[in-house]
Amino acid sequence: MTASGWILIALFVAAVAALTRPMGLYMAAVFEGRRTVLSPVLAPIENGFYALAGVKPNQEQNWKGYAAALVMFNFLSAVSLYLILRFQNLLPFNPQDFAGLPPELALNTAVSFVTNTNWQSYGGETTMSYFSQMAGLTVHNFLSAATGMAVAVAFTRGFARKSTTSIGSFWIDITRATLYILLPIAIVFAIYLIWSGIPQTLAGGAMATTLEGVSQDLAMGPIASQIAIKMLGTNGGGFLNANAAHPFENPDALSNFLQMVSIFAIGAGLTITFGKMVGNERQGWAILGAMALLFVIGVGVCYWAETQTTPALAAANVNPLSGNMEGKEVRFGIAASALFAVITTAASCGAVNAMHDSFTALGGMVPLVNIQLGEVMVGGVGAGFYGILLFVILSIFIAGLMVGRTPSFLGKKIEAREVKLVVLAIFSSPLIIMLLTAVAAGTEWGRAGPLNAGPHGFSEILYAYSSGGGNNGSAFGGLTANTPFYCYTLAIAMFVGRFVMIVASLAVAGALAAKPITPETSGTFPTRGPLFIMLVASVVVVEAALTFFPALALGPLAEAAANTLF
Image (cartoon, helix red, strand yellow):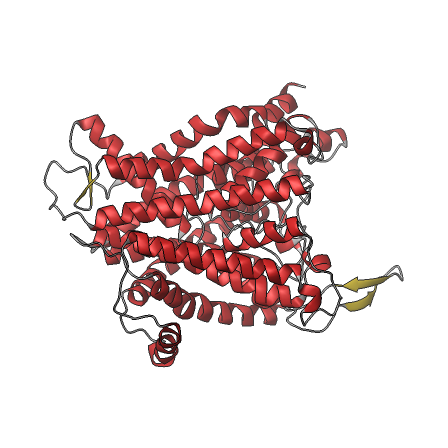
């Protein structure tokens, strides 16, 4: 580990901290319907959308209506994307004349982008037309991110409101999230990315001649616009197969840094949005503190692990002080690669600037564990916040049992119905992850996928289903996932991991909104200090350890032990 590496990590934390409050306050104003700096321009457009869609701005929904609208909207989004991918050969902006995707790959990709997972069983530059990339994938990058933000805000209203059945309007929340937050920031970010050297063109690829005199076809296209929302919306799906390791997606150290910051910007800001909307900003900072504690631990472990050598490098007499540069871009190095890996899995983004498959056993385990913690360290845009709120409720319930008091959070009593729904939401993703991992490891169809044998091959399978069920989208690498077995089973994992958690979260929000707010007393468990932060972080870790430790013992831990002993 080097001083420059720690300085990079410190600068990242400082940049996110500086953006958190302004971003959070702005989003609170947007979702509360207050006037913002963009209102003079965007308010007429917003009202025009409502008029066209027949949406009444003052009409709200209960949790069932909100959930029904959300599920139907996303179902129709998946169908539309599936049709675009299947028939892209008949659609415009296809200079490479790509054929339509086969049914299993089109289904996998449609579910992937609608669920904000962006798992890619394809190479973008060799599979997707420009129309599919723009009207299909990029559009759903916006919509899936806006869906997550809408659920986070609806959950927040469950705590902010009292004795009511309404938690807002899905149509209004998704419109405001897209129009006032995602779109303006993505436009500005895309302009910077174009300036930094990322292509934005509808022309075909360019031909270049290498120093060896060999002709090379350089894949290009409308890349910058997709990269902007890919990072900002914690989507992660790249225009190019090499993702953020490709110089056309991530040219230099500055673009790498800004892309990392953009991944965390909205997720971190939502904690302050929550605090502002419930009238207790300190509570938002406390929740962010629990997220930050888990994140910093993960960064430290991953960075340390990647500064160690591997048996293969040792056998090749590579200087052990150089650390593990296998699978990493020399323009980024170990610190930026390890930091990016932790950010992208802590935020459920899934973009990668290095090959996680080439990390050391323990270094590669950190991104895997981040996903298995359940989208709580900032997490996907919106998804991370309602994910951490579920753990907050569970932590408060456990604390109440320990001290013999009725658990309460922000004046809302936590009772049996809420706890049951929280448990359903939290354990739906681990259940589908472990079930499908077992099926894949126990069948010839599944075992045909991994590139490596032994514990590392098992890690490839476990990572894939963790990434799908956790809606992360990053790949460990090495796994051949473009087969009917993996396309269909990963689609199931992504669907369950997204929508079971969302519907259960909305049910919790509806139950909380109907409750009165009870003033805090001296006997109320404090939820804004170090004890609360440690409690939430501990519950997150314990839940993941009890669920996934046996599987980790068969994969990265077994590989680490073998490397140490043999």
